Length: 105
View 1 (cartoon, rainbow, N blue to C red):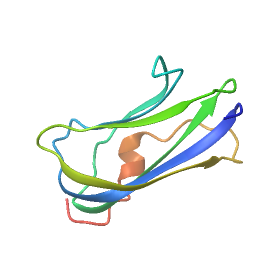
View 2 (cartoon, rainbow, N blue to C red):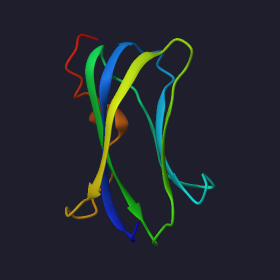
View 3 (cartoon, rainbow, N blue to C red):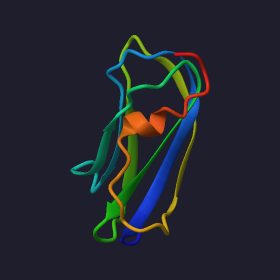
């Protein structure tokens, strides 16, 4: 993937969150953490989390991770990564991005 700014969007559904989940974008076999975001504030039902990240240099591999606990009951139905043409503003905190949950908390 070439150097540049990207937006990643995760979406799925959830019955229960533990409050200890997180999302991560890494490269170089997991050795280079590019972005780490707590998955806080998501309600039950359909959920969506978006955030921007920057690759300072091209990477040969990119890995996306979702950490869950034994108390989490959730699915990931899709992950989309696309170049982000917007100016390099500060990344949205995951708590703001995840607030796009459509279910009851």
